[in-house]
Image (cartoon, rainbow, N blue to C red; front, side, top):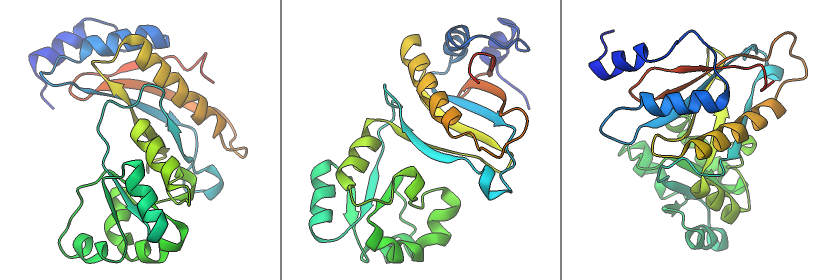
Length: 230
């Protein structure tokens, strides 16, 4: 894959094989974000888990103290007073059965997170083939299947992110934007890692955190030392 001048210049400015401490890595990854838009900074965490085993699956959610820098569009499946509650909390879209054909037949997906009250999961389940592959299905572990729709919407709008293992046993999550201060990015990263460390499966043998990389949308990644994080 060919990279542009900015990418290559960034690569030459630091030792990409060196694992840095968090503050050094954050400072470097901000320098690597040279695009003309505000790049997202992502953490890529390679674990020693084997996601094929249910007891080693990692999935949860955490509210980043400084948010993600992204405006998140929330869709809530709820009826009656809970629908009113969701609207009052600032949900972008609220509905019930009426939304099924819009999503299924018209391909409407103008939302980033889906929340549902437990009584609506029978309805939402009909959208599994559409929402599932896009990682949009509500899930109790992520706090998106709940009767407390006010808290769910508020948390998501405040910067709640979901983390989960992919097929390669890696967790990919945003920790902010390149325009964030180093302190904000470091705080968000530390909050994320505290949550992931707490989620360590009891059955896991061997090393939990294999490697951590921070990378901007368009620039090269920076390795973070796992020594002080485990």
